[in-house]
Amino acid sequence: MSTVYGIAMAVSLVMTGVYYFVDRKHDKWLGHLFASVAVCDFGYFLLSLSKTLDAALWSNRIAYLGNVFLPFSLLMMIMTLSRFTYPKWLPKILAAVNTVMFLIAASGGFLPIYYKNVSLGFVDGYPVLIKEYGPLHPVYKVFLFAYFAAMVAVIAHTAVKKTVVSSKHTVFLAFVVIGNIAIWLVENMIHSSFEFLSISYIVTEGMILFLYSILQDYGITDTPKEAVTVTEQHTETVETIKAFTGEQTESIMKNWGAVDTLSQREKEVLRFLLENKKRKVIAETLFVTESTIKKHTAAIYRKLDTANRAELFERAKEHLQLHCK
Image (tube, rainbow, N blue to C red; front, side):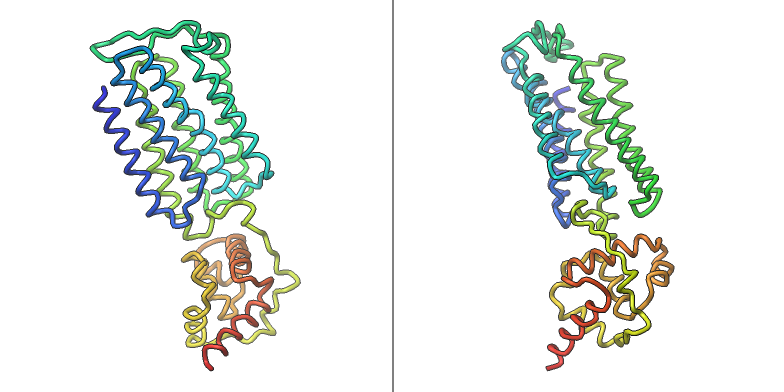
């Protein structure tokens, strides 16, 4: 069993390294998620090697550290992907709640509140903590249920508001969350000595990493406060703006330094904007909704420090003239 946990720990560390290559923006919540999985699997691995009760309890605490903060990171990441707007104070409040939950879960061996009694036993030569649960142990189940419910609620909101690129991505997120809920429920029903979540967490990482690699090209992985919605109803002056030629567009894309801050999909949309195409035409060409193009346009305006299409063209002309000189 220690070999399996060791492999799981090694894979989680490799996945953390892969994350830095795949997620170009290094989203902090995705980073927290990967770190939590690594800490969790590290704790399980140490527990499988424990020879004394004290060592087993400290290993269990390390595993709980990852387990407690993992749903927090997953929820924040899902809200980011779903462009769900939340108050600035929410992460701090949730972090405080998680810290209290961890202290309760880590009290085993010190206070009889989470475990009334705990001892170390061995099953087929492998160490197992034999626990008699205390009065606060049910709090952990309520804690996890609340997080899972919040994730489902955010995904449901995403499905209704259609804030992710497509319904397939929404279903993908739902599958990730519901899959982990199912495994957690099965574990609690069969009372297995093996922590199946150590494996499911790694599968979850791979699935989310795959989804991130797709969505970041659509500009969807910006945080909600950065996902500014801009309407062009008063500034959309397509008829009065003269489009740039293909050569001029290439020069602007190459020499306007701020363009490098755009995602690949945002650069594609910018080219169409410089050609003075309407949003509807851009959406049809890229096979996405007009709402998605509005979000990309908003991100482009923000990153290029412009407020509307007219200002975008003025700034583009400045950079073009500067380069021509």
